[in-house]
Amino acid sequence: MSSSPRPGPSRPALSPELREVYAALLDRAPENQIEPDLSRIMRVMELMGDPQNAYRSIRIAGTNGKTTTARILERILREAGLRTGRTTSPHLHSPVERIAIDGVSIDEEGFLQAYRDVEPFAAVVDAEQEAAGGVRLTYFEYLTAMSFQAFASAPVDVAVVETGLGGTWDATGVVTPDVTVITPISLDHQDYLGDTIAEIAGEKAGILTADATAIVANQPYEDAADVLRERITEVGAEAAVEDQQIGVLARTPGVGGQMLTLQGIAGRYEEVFLSLLGEHQARNALLAVAATEALLGDGGTVLDGEMLGTALASITSPGRAEVVRQSPTVLLDAAHNPAGALTLVETVRENFRFTRTIGLVGILQEKDAEEILAVLEPLLDYVVITQSSSPRAIPTDVLADLARDVFEDEDRVLEQGGLPDAIQAAVDLAETEGDQFGGVVVAGSVTLAAEVRDLLGVSWED
Picture: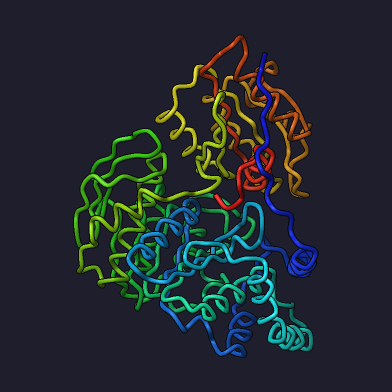
């Protein structure tokens, strides 16, 4: 008989005041709607005294890997003795996750205080915009202003800043970074960034400046590499490019992570353990190491090996190739585009020997659902199609019809709209006939990953 998913301690509910503030933020232009103009965020920061200039900063753009790279980078800097701020998006469970100080999400009161600190200045900018026929500060702009204010109030030594969408017009562009990082670029958010790899890369390349050392990942598409190379030359930036100046020299997967040898800008780091799975995470770690070298010693100082080893061995990245249950293994990933799905497939094949692999998949409407399913199909014996609570989720029946076309065998596709029942169905399939080595792979959206974590009782702070 199959075992039921047993919930652990639930995450704390948002307080009424935080729910009210978050609703007010959401009432602004949504996060995935770009207003390509930095004037609003620049104006509000000016009125606030430009708090983003009170500390050094590292700015990260790309399609996949930004959040994990930010988490690794921030962890190394903290181990090196710096007080850190980190802003990432989107959040899994609570908006407070978007603002972290010294590696810990600010508490609700800290979030509310940051909101209140920005509020009078946002009101001025909103009024100016209304008078000029413009739009109010967007949701992401307001959150960005909150982050930079919270970092200045802490105060922090350095802020690790993940862009929201693109780079050129992203609200995080009000910082003057000391170091910039570009992770791999692929197709995503075409409605806002452009229809081609070159157009998307052009938006991401907007974060590169003459005064910031550029750390650039090896690009899966030559068009992206060409655009980034041209931008680096155009602005005259110092650059360290993966597989040229820096690289992952060796990698041995192991239990709970992998052993790495990395070539940074300044030094070679032998046999350091990274507590994350997958080749992509090794590459994210490389970018973080190089960025740290660039920030701390202008690329000329080797990092302390013991410090680096301690930092990399203690990294967590919730919702990214994360094992959230054993017997059967439930692995979840926020893979929400074809490139992310492909990385997930490679990670599962490298690190798990499932005799039966069950997918639990829900995808949002603006994503390339057919291609995501096509990438996942060879990995999966069966797929349970479901949907998260997001209003942008593709309805279960619609996604299931698409999955049947992709899988070309309707017996391999199950449809279960209710997420608790969908999890149980996936677990039952993984344990069919007493199979002790079946596994469940959850993928398709950040919201799905978050809600599965919730239902399985995984702490939102993990």
